[in-house]
Image (cartoon, rainbow, N blue to C red):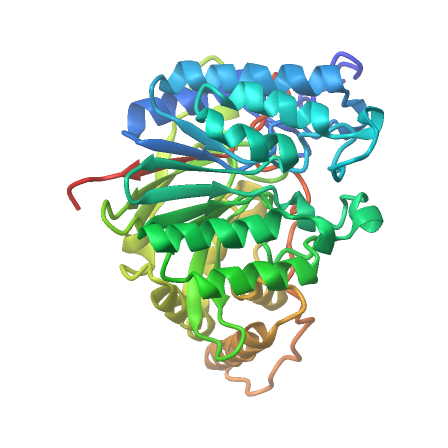
Length: 446
């Protein structure tokens, strides 16, 4: 949203956006997007690329069918040129349509329908996807594909649950057939002995996802917990994870991974993620996050930014990436405030304004709760972890100050601590571009 033709020239250097991006409300310049692609190609030997939605920028007042289709095509062509024969498996974000967020049901007149978007996306995606995906993409922007024997990918259009998708007030989430298709596709995968990766844009526990949709989605995840071996989301711009629990007994059933974003919007360092997965079960075994620091990069506008490994998950947190292992890690976050602060720092991509501002007890609790909530109206696990975290923080404070006075806990709602969770999490264009290219590396010798 910065450096646009319709904006005045900045009066001073303090007002100007940085050459390699800006921590303020700016999307990424095109040359920074290309730097991310070049670095990912050089750094990561990947078999698949997951792009979890949001290609169009944050100039939401300036969208049009013509602009959005141009952006979508330019970015997909650049991705294809960068990675060549490596297939990209995309899903739809809330920024793709015009007007923003609005995904119409079937049967409405063409002039107010999202049909144009689905047709364009199928044409754009057909270089990566087989013809069998056409029917469901044109129906609602979702599809399934089997890239290799024993392994299936399901890409959903999670805007069926998005509270800002005002078409849902007309049609309701219960009249949209996608979740039934999701269940039936998982059932087929189970019968075929396939492992499944699920791609969605909006995390089901996000405050902008209708709880009734999230509840039914969670029931599918629980029912097919032995079939679903990986879940990948976008939307929040944050490096985070989400643990799914069974509704009846509260057992951990799945983990969804959110790989941050290359967009700097807002207060983020550009980043991308590489995953290693087991070649037999397709479970995630490790991941690496690559970033560059905006402050340092903008001091040298004539040089390429210095991309570096921010962290490797198993070295910083745990070697057990199973649902049970990650659920245990959440307890460790609650019991060890310093470990929780480390998670929060990586969650906000070690961005200078965030790190300098710090994260108080309510901020830490919000970040921890968000990892434990996959249905926004069900927060039992959140409350359990929150109480444990506050007790740990009280003990830490009393140990450091000699005081035994406890601090009153703040709100329990899982918070999006810098309020950008409703924005884009992936690819964009020109000086307003963003990218969340989840680079998935299947390592055959683990």
